Length: 140
Image 1 (cartoon, helix red, strand yellow):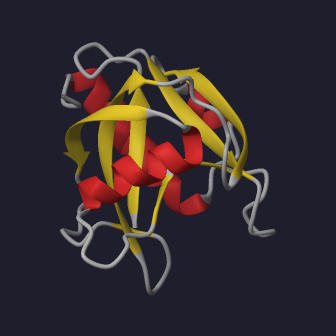
Image 2: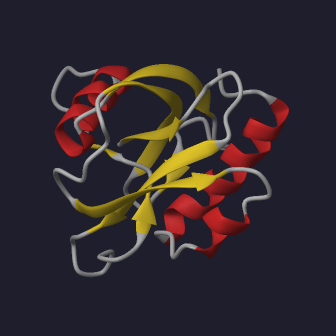
C-alpha cells in the first residue's frame, strides 16, 4: 500500500489534508492518509499519483518518505504494510471522489486538532511521525 501525507507546502508545512473513509464498515467515519494498493508493475510513487487523481482529483509533488521503524513500511495488519510519502498539492481542488465522504485541512502545529480526529488505528503512529518530521523540516 502507498499513502500520501498531503501538506500545503513541503518547505514550510502548516496544514495536512486528511480523508474520512466511507467504507468498509469497520473503518467508515475514521480518518486516514489517502492512497491505496499498487497495481501490477507499478512503483509506490506511480501508485500514489494515480490514487490521488482517482480518489481526490489532485496532482502532487512528492517529498520525502515518512520512514517507518520497519524498513518494509508501516504495519496495517498482520499481512499488509503501507509506505507513506509527504506530498505538496500542485493542481486541482481536493474532492472526495472515491472511498471518502469528507476531506479536511488540519493545522499541523501542536497536532491537537489532528489527534482529536478518530483515525484508523494503524495510521496514528504515522501521524505522530509526520508531526515530528514537519517540526524538524524533514518533509521536502
